[in-house]
Image (cartoon, rainbow, N blue to C red; front, side, top):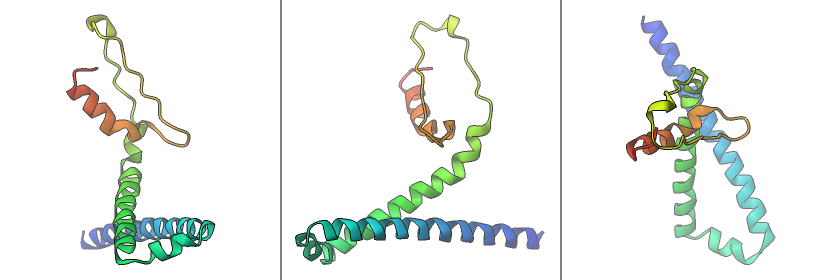
Length: 118
């Protein structure tokens, strides 16, 4: 059992590291391209405030990407389609983007249900 938990922990750490490195690489390329488009931006990028904002954005993006990866298998379940005959409200159709599945809309689906939609 401890070997299984060790492997699971190793898999989680590896996933987090890969996600963080992917985000860091994409931000580095975007930062480089943006800074080279206007030389005046380079001075603003390397201030304490600019680096702090960039670090905070990296943390947020890493968390969002990790959450998306973890929720992805939930989109493979068959959706429960409610009977629309009992409802007076028109249905709300949520359409995900390319290369995504219905798990990307779980948060929006929950908020719509709280607002009274089906």
